[in-house]
Length: 505
Image (cartoon, rainbow, N blue to C red; front, side):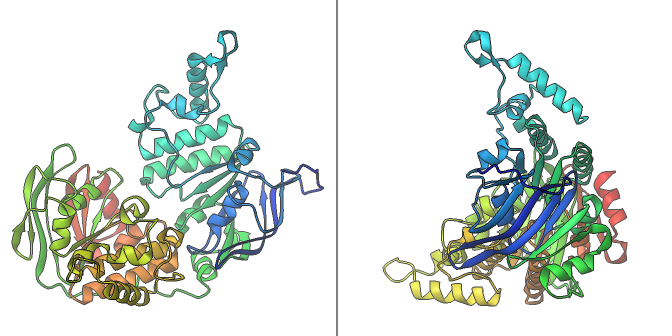
């Protein structure tokens, strides 16, 4: 790991000097130099593929840089693995939380660091562990039963457990990767309060987020990366959202949402009294050709469950679904696919893509049963032709159609999901948090594709937790709270205040 003590500004906890990292065909980082101060919240921003993930993986010991120097807490280091980095006080909270659902809160907090009874041959000292867990939670001002199973907690409570782990390990640097992507507004406020407490204790937070309002709310300084290069590091107070976006994408985005006036035509989708006991009840609405219909609400309002029910992934206890005026009964997503209904799920890595398969395999998947040759094999000519057509049409950045989907950036993975449903000739698209975790430029491109789809006669039903997005993209908005529709807004009556009121009260 190295250990020579170097002369260094006492206020600097971590210094990266001329860091370079390459992968086959990709220059991930090119001569990047950044300093991180003790007790600051430092944002890392940039488009997907800018180099943020590679940088934090180098800091946390996942990757070793090809060249460059890392000076941590006054010493030159080269962590060989994440365990080394963790033992030296560098922790990371991933976007997908690392929680053991079947273990208690206390067991999660001390997983791998359990207190032992010396007199009893090193057996677990459960009482000491639970008392220590209570003490840590009290320290951060949170009241939870440390014996509760972690799987029963909300997303924000699970995140609190991750922060509690960090406190027990006396972390000096905490990396947070898209920490609010699945949190409600109230849960985000709780997280920000905890970040302020860590900051006062001298902990440095590296904060990765595509939500620019969060950068200006919680961060002290911001570093912009683009195409693996350092663009700038500056005080957040000296920047604004337009300058930041311009630095990230290399140009000015004049109209980010590019909201269009769509011409609503015939009804394409209608649900009447849709109900699943314990999830949602009496959901009724219509969606039309040439329209983007938004569904808004707080986390836990059961918006996703409604889309999954429409798509045949969940079975309704009551209610009816009509496609183009005809009642349908989808017993599976295959039935929905056959009726030209596509579903872009909120978790592209778990339920949206086959990450270990090629871009081409993912794009053609929903259509493959309709394109076989006379002896039942896949029509390879069609497969290659349609994959290249949509790679070009949607500007998917990939080395080739045969590249593994897992190697693409988040924005390009999202385009692959969209491509597979367009290939399947979907006329109705159900979009669940379609721009979560993708950068501002990819979002802008995604909105243009959505507008083109409805202009060509399609219908979109879109769930989003981001109020600026739902207001900036959709034609009408249905608001849900605790499994019920609480109102509908359109035109000038659709404001953030009214959305909050309908979603919260």
